[in-house]
Length: 186
Image (cartoon, rainbow, N blue to C red):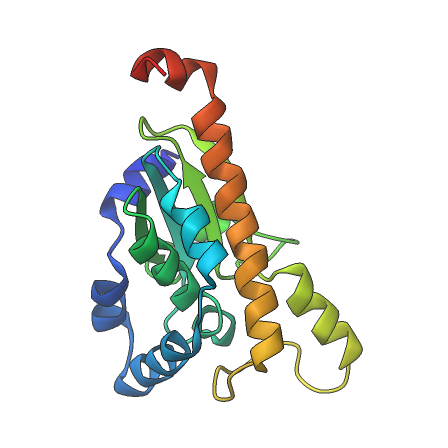
């Protein structure tokens, strides 16, 4: 399967929510989006990104984990114009969902980082280490968040930083790629 073709068919953040989200889904995503705060050092880091980085996110507007993480990606894309972020609905593209399974399941969100010419750089999902630590500490109740209640501010900040670490890793891999450095003469 060509992941770059899936990326090209993906939707921008708002278009994804318009097509796949109900009014309630869009409200939850908007509420979390308003709570995300990038620090000055995080903004400065994102401003250093120079390589175009297509980012494919397999998601579901209905998914609590997506509610609590995907708005973070939109903030990254707004702060770094080199990030070209697109979303694909897991249930709409079952083949992609099957390809990007985690632990034998079609979990979301899953992010695939690509080079400007369509090569996979890396993938990450469905939750960050901080989120898993929080879940283990609270191992009573449902394992899948509903997105109805937002995560505590400290957890949101930790998840934001851990996702930023993954975006940064992909960007520096692209920036230091000898193939891409030769192509761009840098």
